[in-house]
Length: 229
Image (cartoon, rainbow, N blue to C red; front, side, top):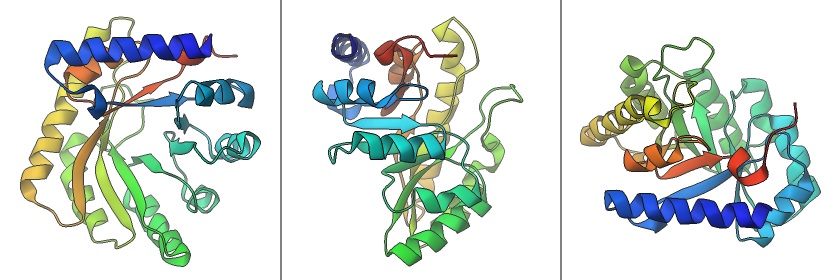
C-alpha cells in the first residue's frame, strides 16, 4: 500500500510539473511520519523514499533509531523549542521551522560545538489562523538578515502552511505570497542566504504548491494512510 501510494504521488507530481512547465527533479517529497511506525517508514524506504519529516523531536529521534537506515534523511517540520535543539543538531538534514532569533542562536551554538553547519528554512505565517506558527511576512527579511550573520546556520529558503480547508485552491494565495517573499529576499543578495527551497503543500494541496513554485512538499496521509488519533 505504501509503495503504491508513493508511485501515485510521483505520478501526480510529474503531471503537476508538466502543467506548469517545471522539471520533476526540482520537487522533493518529504514523507511526514507523524503517528506512523517504523515498519511504514521501512516500506517507504524500500520504495525509494528517503526524506522523512517529523513534528516532534522525541518521535523523530526514536524513529530514526528504530529504522536505523543510513539512507534516510530526516527533516524537522514542527515547532522547535530551544531546549530540544541539542537532540537533533548532530544529524538533522533540514529544519523547516525557524521563526525566531532565539532558536537560530541555539542552532549556532550547537553547530559550533559539533563543527557542523545546519540548514534551515524560515517559517512564515501566511494565513489569519492564530493556531499556526511562523513569523509574520513583514518581519521575514529582518529575521533572515539576523540569521545570515550566524556562521553555522544557513538559510536555504522559506516554509509555510496553507489554511485549513478542503479546497486546495484556498492555499494558493498563501503559497504565492511565500514565493513572492522569496523573490524579494533573493534580490537583496544577502551573504550566507539561499532561497533555493520553498517548502509548501501537503497531501490535500501539494499540486497547488507545485504550481506556485514549491521545491519541497510535505506529504503524510496520502503516503501512509489515515493517521491514528
